Image 1: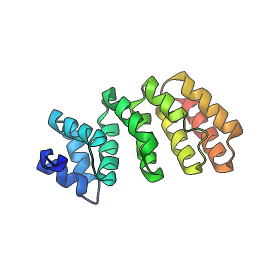
Image 2: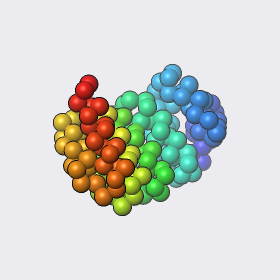
Image 3: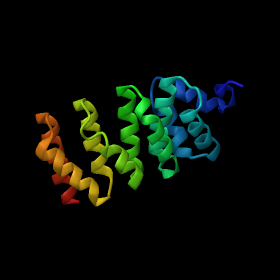
Image 4: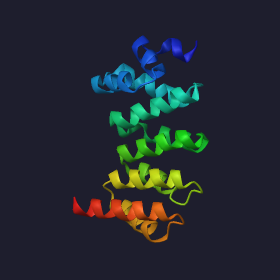
Length: 158
């Protein structure tokens, strides 16, 4: 059976919608069947854009039980979809999520490293602060170093 036939119709439509509003309404309702359906898109054969939107939704859902599945698919994602996964892991904030985000701190793409900075800023784990400090001192791209320094200061003020 096609994975999309198993999804609730409203969720299927929200995944295909151009704007995030429909998906955000589903996230706000937090129905267990929607969470389960989004989760299946991580491992099932799915359109990569739908998988990205599922990761977006799961990151905002706030249930850290999906961290291992997001970590597992992250290496296979194209760069623009990896941004979403790194953001989701930052929002979920578990030690496993932090470790996965940190593993991208030296990535060749400055855009990926930007998302690493933003994700680490959200994670309360003190080890995340150490990685931010390292990126603020030594990242090979000026604007990533500056962003890490700025986010580190903002984090310390909280």
